[in-house]
Image 1 (tube, rainbow, N blue to C red):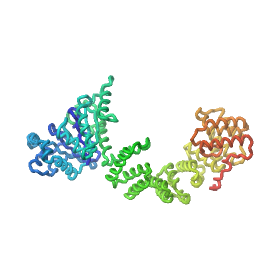
Image 2 (image 1 turned 135 degrees about the vertical axis):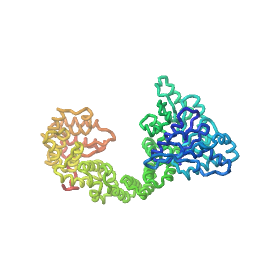
Image 3 (image 1 turned 30 degrees about the vertical axis):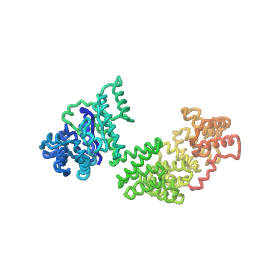
Image 4 (image 1 turned 180 degrees about the horizontal axis):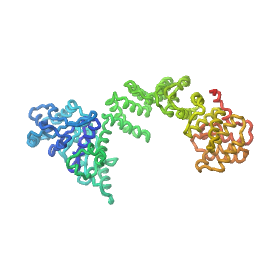
Length: 617
């Protein structure tokens, strides 16, 4: 049960209208809602058609009057009415009005001395009992209290004793600022009081004219409120909405959900839910927001981190059987390197029935970080036994599989269900990104090589497969692969270069005519400036000039290549047909220059690739 009071220092800001719309929206989202009309001097929630109670219903004043007459609290069920609400889910609406229609409301209300009630007749305990009965008998997810305006004893009950949160509505002028400031100060003082109660505050600037603020009048008032109330963010806003439907107290979130007014009411609802860690949606959004903040910046200060950890513990307690919430918590502890705590939460989620590839992979990562490689590998295999995984996900899992189990990878559900293009993407990922997985990548080539030729429509994937053929020493396959494009007359400079290298590897000597075609394309159809300044492109052109009989030009481009290398970046090197670091790339250029200068002891590493022994195709 989460209690939110809707309060305004002065009337005329649409507080009650906002409260009813917010409550109906929460009910539409399958929450059980209890409306409580504590605006005892000017009650009116029962005038809304959706909240109309039956004729015999009683309310707050009757409840308190009964207590004063009998000396004991009565059963709250007598004072609460269930409202008619059509819902396809669990949404329900209840109302505790200010008082009964058939009772002498005015007389009873005037006879209640709230100051004396609290000072001499245990009024505080009475209200606490009322709150407990709401929880036990009505079991609402949210209690929405409509509080009277101004500074009153009843206002203190609504804004300080009862609520978990207070939504403060105000019109942006100095009169409201002065009144709201005092109430906000009183509410915030509860944090340092005996109950140490931290009441969440939501600020809503309401009934705001939708006019051009050419003189920055509204902007200045917003800043004044933010400064006086110590706000870090702009308040929510409900604009003045000219519609005769307001006279009928129409529920805009229900009947006109696409209207601007409905959208603004829903923003209030979203904020209330977000701050309620007992609400599953709120807890999940809170954890997602914390994860987003962790990605953007580290935690500064022990107090901030301590407060977040308290929220984690609160969420874990309130959602102890929610598999997805426990998983989210595990991810956050994992990010903070509390690995044992993360693994425990992953395990609890799995034990409760959460069976998803992601959680097995995340637990595998945590186990691997703890050095428990075999256990990590088992979890990685659990992930790989799921269907419908992306190549990127599979590659992440494969990095955690111990080498002895590589032979089983090809038969896993995740890999065996991939189509040709997905398999090529996976092979590219693990071949070029992880040296330890290159032999496994070659094993996964078997089903593709058996297709003559495999159908790949994606140009990038087509090129990637050809690069893997060359890199792994499958020169005949590579030559045939690239020639299938060349014979159609559709090839570009990349295809021409890769074909020339594949032909060189297969025949054992370079074809001057093949590389001359590369140079012809380079000189006749220059690429855009960014492309021709790319280190890999310049390296390829340098090698092509040498191979086509112009070593001087080749050396010139090799020199130019050294200045195009991006520091701390991995670049594809045609010297060995692998992605290498900036330092390794410089080493390759140095070796290339020796080769071009006639050093017979230097040979392009791609032509002495030992990986061709790993798989006989």
